[in-house]
Each structure stands twice: as C-alpha cells, then as structure tokens.
Amino acid sequence: MSEKKNTASRVQSVKLVRKANNLVEGKYRFDIWEMRVFTKMLTMILPSDEDFKEYRIYLKEVIDDFNLAADKQSYKLLKDGAVKLMKKEIKIIRDTEEGEKEFLTHIAVGLDSFTSRTQGSYLDISFHPKMKPFLLQLQTQFLMYDVRNVLQLQSSYSVRIYELLKQYEKIGKRTFSVDDLKETLAVMDKYPLYANFKQRIIMKAQEDLATYTDIRFTFEEVKKGRAIQSIIFTIKSNKTIVEERKLLTPILTKVFDENSSNVEIYNLVKEFPGVNQTTINDWFAKYSHEYIVERVNILLKQLAKGKDIKNPMGYLQKLMLQDTLFTITDEKNPTKITANKNTKISEKSIKDKMKELEDLKIFYYETQNQIINEFLLKNEKENKRVLEYIQLSPHYDGNISLEENLQRVTLIAIINTKVKEAYPQLFLDLDSKYWAHEKNIKQQLRELGWIG
Image 1 (cartoon, rainbow, N blue to C red):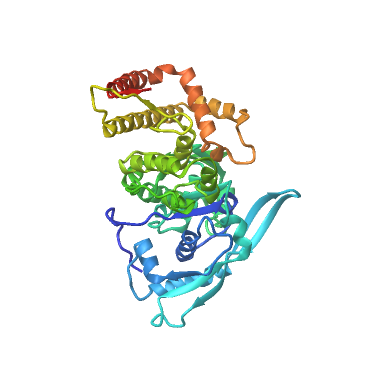
Image 2 (cartoon, rainbow, N blue to C red):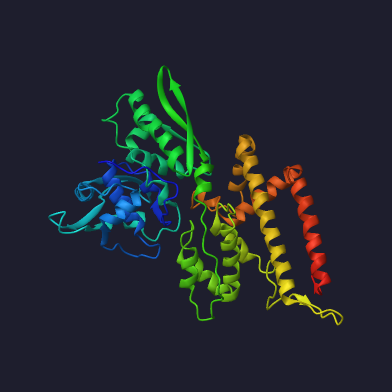
C-alpha cells in the first residue's frame, strides 16, 4: 500500500495518548495496522471516562490521522488490523501486595464491521474490560504524549521504542539488556541475532524518531566478552520537531461570566500533560472564577507568543500559588493606587504596565529554568547529585516515579534554589538585566500613581 509523504504544513489537531507505565512496559508485538487501530482507540479515551465505550473508527479519520493514501485496500487493512488486535494478548508484569505477578489479558473486544468495504466506512470496537486499570482514570505513573509523534512512523517497533524512551526523557538515559528489550518487543524468535535486531529495529527507530518525533537518541553497546549484553540509550529533545509543533493555543478573548463552570476551564487546558478534572475542581474550591481565568490567560498568551513552556500544567500550578505576584487587585490584599490631583490616572496605562511587569517575571522564570536545565544536562555529576538530594526531601513522594516527582512544582523550586545557591555566577547576567528592567517599569508605574 502506498502512503503519502509527510508534509510539515499539514494541519493536525492535538490529541493525547495516555497509558499506565506498566502497559508501556508490557510484552507484546503489533504489526503496523494493529498499532494504528490501537493508537486511534487510545486517542478516543477522555481523561474523565470511568468506563470504556464502543469506539467508532472511521476509515477517513484514520487516513487523515496517519496521512495514508485512500486506496481500495485501506478498509480491508483497517478491519484486518482490528480482527488481529482482538486476538492479541498482552503480558504485563506488576507489583502487588502478594508479590510480583504476571498479568495476561486480551486487548480489544466486540468488533462490529460491515461485511463489504463498499457498504460502510467504519467499524465499532472496544477495549477489553481488564484493560481499565491501564487506560482509565490515570492519576500517577503514566505516560502521556502528543499522538502526532507516532502518526508518521511506519514501524510498530519504532512506536514501542518511542514510548519506552519517552518515559525517561527527563532522566536522559535508559538501559536495557538486549534480552529484556527483545522480550518487551516480543521479537526473541524473529531476531535471534543481535546484528539483525540492531539494524532492523534499533537503527530504524533511531532514524524514525529523529525524523518524526519530539525526542531522538544515541546508543552505546555494552559487551560481555565478545557479545553485546546491554544497550545504553541517551535521550534528548528533538528541538527541530518541537519548534515545528509549538502549540498555539487560542487566547481567551472574552471574560467568562460568573456562571461559567470548571468544565469550561478544563476544556481550555485539557490537552496539557498531567491535567485532570480533580485538579480543576481543587482550583475552584480555593480560588475565584476570575482568579483562575486570569492565570489560564497568562499561560495561553505565553504559548501563543511561541514561548517554549515544557510543563504547562506545572507552570499553571505555580501561577495559582502566586496569589499577589501578577494580580492588579486582590480581595485580601488590594493593590493601592493613589489619586494624583494634577494628573489623570489612566487605568489602562497602569494595567498595561502591570502586564509588562507580569510578562517580564514570566520571562525571568522561564529563562532561569532553561539555564538550570541546560546546566544539568551538561553536568551529569551535578545532575546525579541534585536527583539524589531531592529524593531525600520531605516533599518527595515515594509512591510515584522519579520522573513524575520531577514534574511537581515544589520539587522544581527546590532544584532551582539548590542550583542558584551553588552556582550564582550562572545567573549574574540574567539577574542584573531583570532587576534593572523591573526597577524601570515600577518607576513608570509610580509616576502613574501606583504604590507597590
């Protein structure tokens, strides 16, 4: 089957794939059409879903999603992929109170499709109920990524390797023994020789990820005697792809009335990794509607300007905690503006300057984080020391993974403080420019009658 070439200008909506980590680590093998059906089903699950639904998969949507040629074989290949998916079992190793267990389940059930490809252009299918713990109501220890990263991959093994490495992107390295990786990909029988395995799977994935996904990797082979025993993957952000896919989220252009529900806020941020309805509900329990909208606007405007905010939800949580940093008025601690009898105080001018001050602070924190991230990436020893340090912190949650802990605002702040204290020289230029600029803006505000 011929397939269209990828075009950078092709517009695609952002859809997220969510999987429990132990599902990502599961032992199974798909062909590319099984993988496409499976991936399409994953994008149809909503974070709020409490049970699986029957998912209707339209041929046209699959063709559009995966940028395929709309020829006569498409429906047959799609249906065949769904049939084979129903027959597949997945093996998942999981820890229980009774010890480590091996869990086996089928993946999909209830395929309903037309007998002739000329009679219909869709099929209905659902996930096996036993898959619920690995796909629904995920709060901790799960992988989430933009599905656009896998839509152009022509090898199901490249998709699996992308997911296995994406889990460790923030850590930057992942080591597999050759046997473990083969077993995870279920190819022990297909590629018994390492040379073939390396050429057909590892190097193919390396090329695919560098071309189509938001991460790339290099690898190092570790020998035992003359045989390759393990592979050390070094994982890095694929900045070319990331820049091409910067999320330009529409800015809120109206003030929502007080009857707007948390559902509306959820819809504005639902595509960001780590979002869930519980978090939104917590915001509404603590803050006013206007307070929340203002902070969501700050984030969306920064994204629309092209700012590279790697963890939007973490950044938004930080904004929620900074109750007096960016607001012009606050019920508990109102900003005082004194009237100047000789000059008309322009409310708009003050707001514009406050916005300029707000943007400056955001730029400062983002630049500071970028300096710290680049420093730790270049200094493996210091990176290791910082990771060990935060694992001893009382704020470290031992019930979730290191990667998930690194997404938490509290620990990010601890890391930043630690690095700033140890290496203040890294921030001299940034700090001097920031304080000078901030002083200038505040002086202009005071001239307008603002006291702060």
